[in-house]
Amino acid sequence: MKLPHLLGNILSLILILGITVPGLAGDPTEKIRQTTNKILSIVSDPAFKDPSKAKEKKKLIRRAVDECFDWEEMARRSLARHWAQRTAEEKKEFDRLFAELLERTYMSKVEGYSGEKVRYERETIDGDYAVVKVKILTQKSKDIPVEYRLKKEENDWLVYDVSIEGVSLVNNYRTQFNSIILQSSYENLVKKLREKVELK
Amino acid sequence: MKVIYWVFIFALCLIPFHRPCLAGDSAPSPSLECSISQSDEKQDAYATQMALVTVPLKPSGVEEPMETIADPLEPINRTFFHLNDKFYFWILKPVSSVYKAILPEDVRLGVRNFFSNLTTPVRLVNCLMQANFKGAGTETARFLLNTTFGMAGFLDPAKKEFKLEKKEEDFGQTLGFLGIGPAFYINWPILGPSSLRDSIGFVGDLFLDPQNYLVTSIPANIAVKSYIQVNETSLTIGEYEDLKAGALDPYIALKDAYHQYRQNKIRER
Image (cartoon, rainbow over the protein chains, first blue to last red):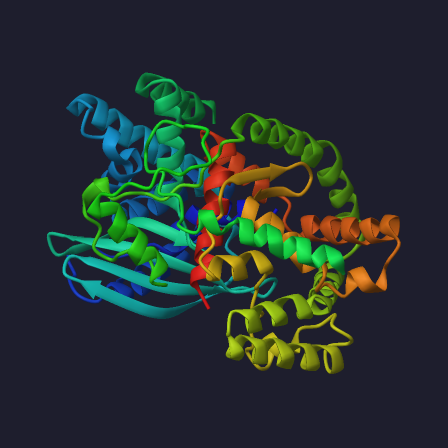
């Protein structure tokens, strides 16, 4: 099936390409380029090739990613209209679980980077929102169009959604979470999230 | 050829589903009559979607209406989902893994290119039906280049040297281009996720695929199609596992990914 690769590789690409460096306002595309190189240098650094350094490597990559992704915004959008009904504590817990889920599921994929080139196609900025379209050039199959959606927070561009071939990560989780909440309850959703995250 | 008329009559039956089902975030209700809300918000979302532009740049907070595909057949679809899951892990993946171990990747990529080259008429005709003449030209050029310089289609010099990308079009997308909505989600056993519109598209494309005219005996035809699938799976092992790993509800994850993917393919030229 072709579709699973879209979801399966979404965050590997996110983590590989990364997004903006905080403190530098301006061109979102340029930020993507810079952070891409940052993460790539960590991944291909020979000093980290040793398996004993794997934990440290992971921490560095995670830090670079944290600078670029607005986990709270992603979590909020994926809960959609169920977000407003949550207490502050529930929101905090959900943020943490959601970020954990994404990290655990896709962090390992970063290692799978094998030199694919990225072509930056288009950037659209509308006030505090921007869309950056890139194409991942693969040798094996057709080029993969990826779309990053960014929001400006205090002079800092952060990613709140990634779409691969038109499949938005946030929308996909939103559909799943909505279905689970409507068919059972929010508590059940949190239970499932916890189980998934703690299992790995 | 009488069958092709039935295909088009079926397509006409889809006209009531012309407007995409803006089911929104309501509780799942098995009904074919999609309740199209009259609210301005949803009208705008519909208009934007049909205007061949991507999702509006400035999202209006988290309450933006989300387009989902109706799923009145959910119980059956879920059953087939589990069936396909077992089929993948018990049959398709083991066979593909052995096949992968035997043949080097370049050969398998070549096989993929070869069969893809043969299905050019499907893409070409559907480009024409969507008045995408540039796409039709690209497909023609790709076919000529790959057949002559690409060792009868095993190689893809059209992409490597001339940067001509394959234009993936099918009859389901053509119907979508003409404004026909997916109607509802169908998860076929073996064949996988689809929709009413795309299933009709699949049948329509059977008349355009040269393979069906070259290999007329049904068992042989199925054998060829199975081989193509095994070859394709050998190149994409791990992707379905990744989908399951990242999802809380893999059935919904797949359904939604399929729907978003198809909507995007219809939008793009």
